[in-house]
Length: 420
Image 1 (tube, rainbow, N blue to C red):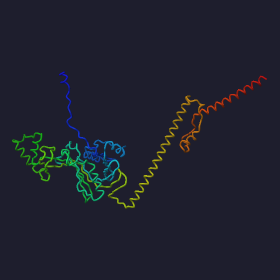
Image 2 (image 1 turned 90 degrees about the vertical axis):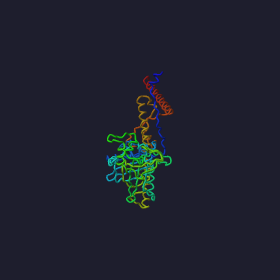
Image 3 (image 1 turned 30 degrees about the vertical axis):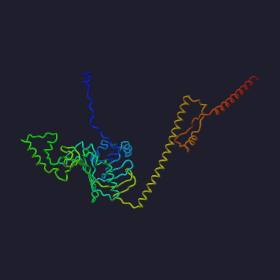
Image 4 (image 1 turned 120 degrees about the vertical axis):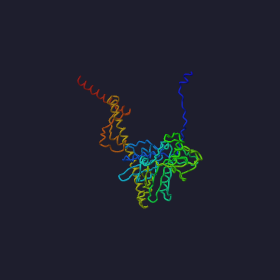
């Protein structure tokens, strides 16, 4: 018993509990439509990283897929927004739509920079994978609220990212920040993505290396004081500005970042960068009535004419749907009639149905009664077998008996003449 107990493996209990996800948390699809360059494909991948973890990071888009395919699967998956990149001959556009019925905001991207290029330009790049396990913090700067399209754009950006409760939020989950900055002079929107770094204030880089678990390399120093003093001279002013120092209300990640301690906040850009401008707002999902257009202005009369034309197109579409439904029903009836004819013909050939129990009927007349119109010559209707009722068969039997009696009388008459 002791040996069997010793050989039995110990089961490790999972200590990390997965937090329950809020059903109202927004989720996104980030994809591209049409032919795009390799740089745009990389931009789509970088933007999926920005929207993590509430996005389909490994979403596969095939050429045969249409927007309706993504809309159909968005409901069961709880996806609320869709960001679609498309590239034309002269411009690169980004459409941000609310699923499943809109509205849709279309932006024209004037310029962009990939995440790898941003990290390559930094002297001390920083990329922590664990920072992408929680959603980023949204910051909207300089967005006016005096017009309808600016209010709608602001609301759309806010709904893409999950909201936070400042009284209950855990500061350890806020590791990234997304910035949208509006420039009123040019009408452009600058997009930036940063990593949030927190470190204890008043400590040099050498002291922080001692505070961490990594053991510093002291082979070039005779005393540890030389190591500490050299590190403080090299990075004395880095992050020591009073404007960047805060008192932490909670304990956050990093050495020395305890509750009620003073720490310095430092942002490191992760990428990508984008500069874009609002082009138009559509009422539906990637379609519908244009609510705002930055390049085209219409008069009330033109708007009314477009609305009337839209209603007429909708009416014609309903008529076509009805005609299509009628055609489908008619073709189904024709197929069923041909199947019944073939099955009946097979039974008659095999001898399963006696010929005298059936009579030929006019297929054309049957088609007129069932379908309600003249048959086309392509159908080649030649008649069908119809089972007769018992009364018809009895009349035929009586008629056959009368014929037999007449035949017998005729043969008896010939026999009498021969005898004479």
